[in-house]
Image (cartoon, rainbow, N blue to C red; front, top):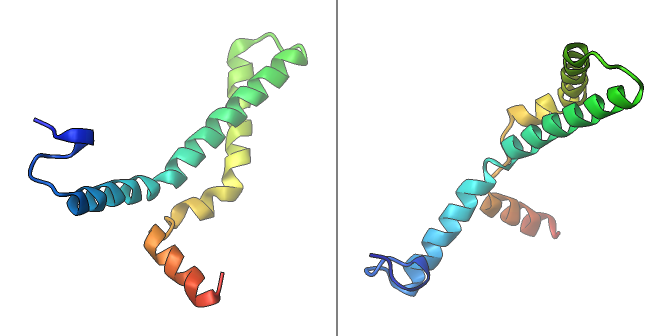
Length: 100
């Protein structure tokens, strides 16, 4: 059984806040995967739509070219994807050191 607001009955408010921060931090570590998935999907859709508007009626060819175009859009950011972002706590401490 859950307590009020998703809290387990044995948690106090401080434990709830810690669990909430940990959950959010764990989700933010994967934001680069969500971004790249959206980038590939968006580029594929845009290329497919543009090829259709240009008069290409062959669906297999249109989808193949759209897939190639999406990876050409994605490729420059592949290096960024290979290094996951730092946790939020480290980003905040780095900003504090730099004065930002």
